[in-house]
Image (cartoon, rainbow, N blue to C red; front, side, top):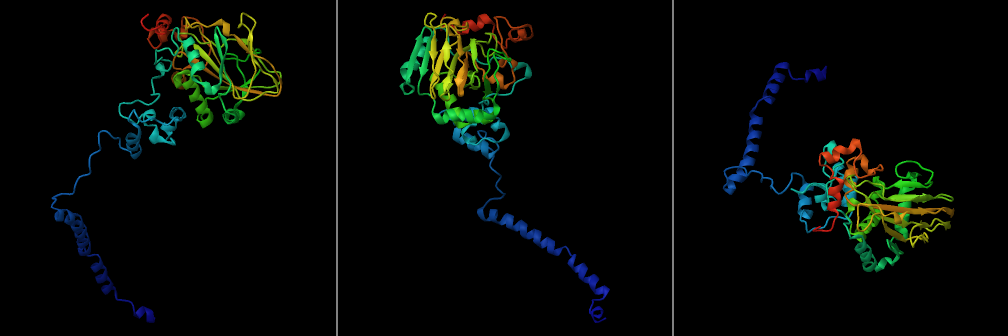
Amino acid sequence: MAKAAQRKPPIAASKDAAASASPLPWILAIGAIILAMVLPNLWSGSDAVPPKPPKSPERGGTPAANAARLIGCDPAVEEHLMCPAWHKAGFCRLGKMQSKQRCPRTCGLCEGVPPRNPQVARSDRCRRDNVTAAVPQGELTPLFERVLASYPEYSPEALSTSPYVVLLRDFITPDEAMAFQRVCQPKFERSLAGDQLNPVRTSYQCWCNFPGCFTDPDVHNVTHRINELLNIPYNNGEELQIVRYESGQFYRRHHDQNTAVWAPQGPRVLTFFMYLNDPASGGETAFPALNNGKGLVVEPKLGSAILWPSTLDERPMDADPRTDHEAMPVHAGIKYGANMWVHQFDFKTPSERGCELTYVNTAGRTPSREHQYLVADGRVPSYEETVQQAMRPGQ
């Protein structure tokens, strides 16, 4: 009862509520805010709040894009060596680029510079974007001569000169060789001969077409080194194929050129094969037709690589039958190796677009019926046009 007697009567409580609901305090608070905003400008002589500076037309709207333009849009500024692999892995698109500021041109952050592989209509997925042959007529011999003369660090040796087969004894380091084996260990599956299972080839293969492989720094450094050695664009090389031969496994006599001239990537022109370990016994690479039919045999040796042509020097769109070869059976232990096949034209761009002609065998000078539209619509040059593009300048 004592506490109840201390309560304010209802009338008094109503007066307090009315006082607290008065608008005067709110008016005073709003006025103070307005004065705080206006006084600094009055003091400085300005009659309005300065507008935000407009976006520079040379810059995009995001800090990442601005930073990229400042750091790397100048063509003289070299992008990171890994940029093509990071782009291929989708890092630009997914915002996962580790060094995005160093890949602005590759990622398409520079005005007027398209990304490495812009999206195209599905009907253009097999389009040939470049029409300059990687190894034009008469340029195979100079390529091999340059490799022999200009790269003493790889201890090159010509095992054959007609056609050339070049051995590079010190091309890949043990750590790099182990990187190939490590990234592919869970990915090996039965090898295909061309694009199907065949008893002529009994080994296992791993295509380096997944991010865990082609974005591995060691793997990409080796890829870049091959491109530099051959003076071939990155896009002209197929994805590396890592192979594993167990005891008794082999690949019978075959030829690497299995792509039609009319396919967007054109024929395979070079093979670069690396040995990734020392098998206990066997596993040689043999060229039965060389040395006037006496043959040539190359022993597998960790760190070494061999380079040979698949097409003729004077007819760079036609296969050279002299470079038939085979992987001899492994007698003991395991043999690891890695192939890179180089095409006359861009392979990776149509491959990344999903062009089926980059992963099936094709043949002949005329497209198959289902692919004749490629030539008819001008997406791929005809056989005659392609041959002309591979001629010596001025012919």
